[in-house]
Image (cartoon, rainbow, N blue to C red; front, side, top):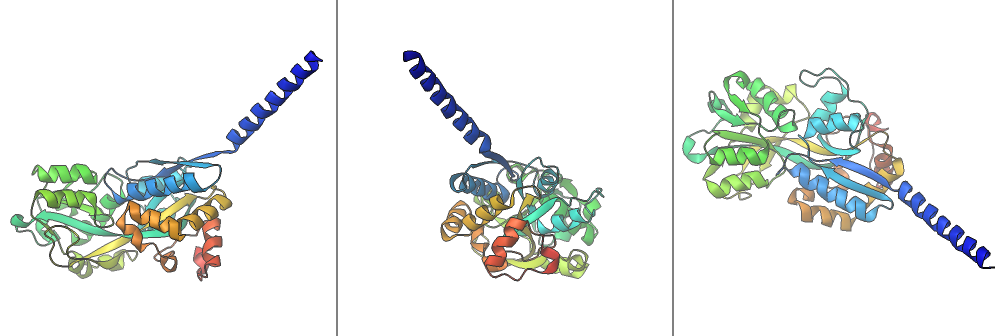
Length: 327
């Protein structure tokens, strides 16, 4: 009798262990590509990863720092990460094999939702007398990490002006650039990120700075015709200390993306959770730029197909999805 009871206990224990192992095996561990330290990408990636882990059953997501938009595009394509944030311009160019010095086609990436506009912000000292981008000839300019969306946007803009080879680009992330600017190792630094941005706030706290109005130079140089995924935007006065007037600039749109192999139900549940009132409140608490996250703007500026899970959700929400964006 004792032997039978012992066998029953062992069998029950084995079933419990097997059930626990099965549950553990069923849990999906996923990675989310963010961006440089101090950048808006990181805030959004962290916030979405945390919310997914707390609200999507059997899914645990970790946020990973990265060089930014183009690195995320490539890593999603190669299945190194499951999710990431990529600018709409890089999505378009990457899918069509038109990235700078890179003819590869990154076509295994799917869009989920527009997150926020990422305005170009060109920071200089007020006392420098610089009021246009053209005046940066011969100057050291922090343009973002090499390969990042910020650096590529800077290259496109300054090349269109005809001065890319006449400035001294310094490939520094946002926070290091702000520090170098403070130490007078840079004459200017450039970011493309939602505002207010922590690195620009840091610069404004240390010095009297000016955000250069670059929209007119972009328009006059044919920049918008060459790169139609950029659009004019106004950086509102008062968003930074000492910026007392609206600044005209242009922006790309940051897109939340996933690999084509990420399960449809995971994406569907996630986008539904994030775009709930509670999810949006969580995102806004992480970064003020999340106030731009709207159902009606979910596919604005998009030029690649949606992930099937996102397509299902947006059609349920009543969006009319153009043919070229359907999975």
